[in-house]
Image (cartoon, rainbow, N blue to C red; front, top):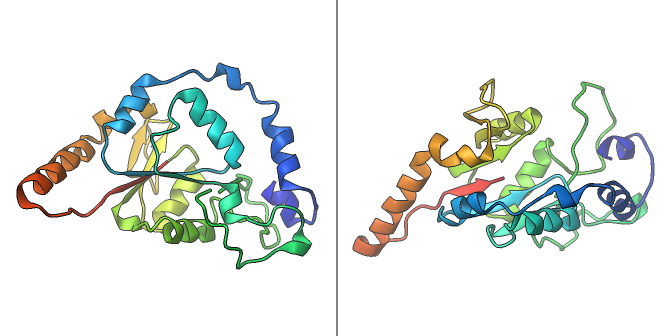
Length: 213
């Protein structure tokens, strides 16, 4: 989508998403109580930063039973609030209600300046940090795309590459399955327990850790 826009094609974003996602087999997605318990048991901020539109993100979360496990969703509409055509673009749009999108091709093809703000563009990450009040140095970034992971690393995030156990440049942690979070990152739960103790015994609010998935 970003590539088509970059080389001059004009189309409605909603129509594109509806056509693409309307053919996905959502019925194959089932509730994931194990992941739900993992997420709910991790008392840190959790924000979704996805290269999809809000309807797709909501549908997937609902199918998995994870709709109440995240503080917010940043998706296509958040970073690309102009939704009809290029003539109405407005960089100062005030529709930042947690929502981002699309991904650029994995090839090294040179394209004109992008008209769609999306991962793996650094501009997308910068806007997410600002919108969600995120300190990248204190944030874990989970993604299954190595290009997205490598950009995240350049932007100062701690990175977790999901879907493989092989680490490579720009990858701090590699998870074969998202279900392995606690085994790979026990310090998240340990730190969370420590924060609770600090609050109970010292009355102090600890520094917050954020997770972006």
